[in-house]
Amino acid sequence: MSNRSRHRWVVVAIFFVFMLLHQSDKLLIGPLTTPIMETFNINEAQMGAVSTAALLVGAILYPVWGYLYDRFARAKLLALASFIWGSTTWLNALAPSFGVFIATRASTGIDDSSYPGLHSIIADYFEPQTRGKIYGLLQLTAPLGYLIGMVLALILGGLIGWRSVFFITGSLGVVLAVVIFLFVREPERGRGEPELAGLEEIGIYRFEWKKAGELFRKPTMILLFIQGFFGVFPWQVITFWIFRYLEVERGFDETSILITMSIVVLILASGYFIGGALGDWAFKRTVRGRLIVSSIAVLLGAIFLVLAITSPVENRLLFTILLSLTAIFMPFAAPNMISSVYDITLPEVRSTALAIQLFIENAGAATAPLLAGIIAVRANLSTALILICTTTWVLCSIFYIVAAYFIPGDIRVLRAQLGERAALEKAS
Image (cartoon, rainbow, N blue to C red; front, side):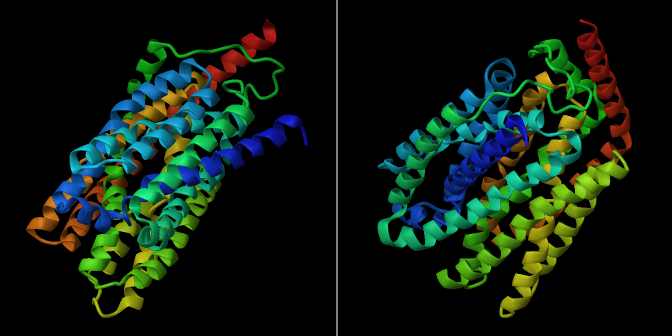
């Protein structure tokens, strides 16, 4: 095994730990919602605004991070993002009032938009046919981080308080910043593409506004942007409000929540890798494969969520089974969306392309916790979950199918561009 091949798995391991701990910190606020509401004496709508504030900051900064990653060393910028994560989480833990809390919580969104560079680095270490599995592996960190955050919140939160839990996770961010800075090497942009993989040296290609503008002329990219606006609504609503829903409308105690959500989250985690692997399998048979898998999965997720929420309150086993079936299909689209973006974009604008995608996703979904809170105040959380999640998932399924129609043409254009580059490199 070559040094480069060994190092790429070291990079995957470091990124996995970084994302796992970062997601644990980011998602802690869900299971800590009730004690935080009690500390500041606020209602659901005000608490929803807390998450919305962080999402808005993250959404606004996605294009900034994307541009920086395409212009400068991605690994060093990722180390900076990890340091920002640690320091802003500490500030959030120190907040003496609700006004300061919401302001410092908003600042934690700065580093939440730092993932495009990480995914771009992975694309330069791995070929297109295997990226779905790698992205699926890395995205296991979201549900596993959620599980870790849940355990920290439900066990440590009651013993040492929610502020101390934030101090612990913030400190880990600073430690990871040092690890990334010292041990992650910057790969050549485009090295993972089959047209360029065999070259001894690859020309340096940097971000250009003209190339970025071409993203908006790709039919597949436009459709992915549109579905992205709706796609994260269900995630934000479920992750933020599910604990409150189980407590208030299902009558779960802390132990029941821990057992039920541990099962559901572990099953959800498997969905990332299964979805990515299934997308890679389908992609090898047709370039439309990733998007077809995504379209079917979101529809199945919507169906099982409605069945779970409308199941009898007293039948907890049935509810857990149906929620688990929802969970396994929820993440199928995530690794396939990232892989599809990179299947049609030039290496030097990939961070920007994914940043725009995630900007649109989070800009749309930033209002989701607040919207769900408002619906819950006027009706209940069951209504909020069903209304928001099913509507957006059905729309996303339609957009994925339409995008699948256009993606072969966009892939052919990219492969031709990379082939031209390879020919020029060999001639020089």
